[in-house]
Image (cartoon, rainbow, N blue to C red; front, side, top):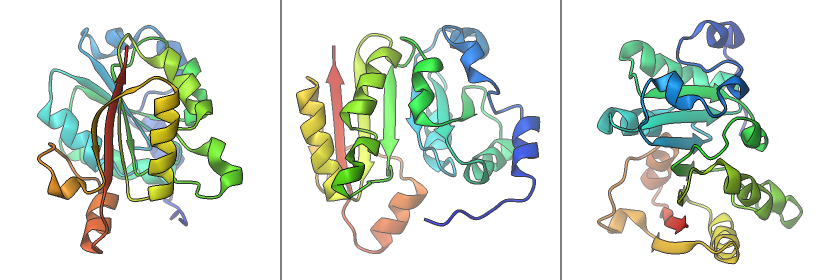
Length: 209
């Protein structure tokens, strides 16, 4: 995917009250940032923010953080907040490889929506459900580990099923066609695009104590 450059994106991010600058400083202190002890949910690769914004709006008793690597993409999520700010939603611009420096036993639920599938075998460790990342997640979760994933890519999905099983996760829900289930679902921008093309969405929900 070619990223569209957004003029002054960096300056806008630095000035935004919805971005957590230097998030490492809030490690162990995110409940102070939100001024409550509500559960904390994290989305990796939040994109333009439709999913996490609607989740936060529909669940005011849960705190949400959207993590996005690219400044030019997360600007669109900030625009939603400028239209109607939500007190339980913040954003971080960072690489998921650095999660261990940001969260330690604080996350209750992790969302992986339409992550880069990295379909070539030599890139398998870059997938967000690879053993490399699953090891990182072990220490960011508060207690019970809960992961929800959506993807259109069967290679990524099959890899996720294998790796999560090997890490001892229990499968709560699995579907190869999310639209034809009764699973509650908020669609992402990518999801709407894929569905319009007739593509089926793969879904899983797993937990580990």
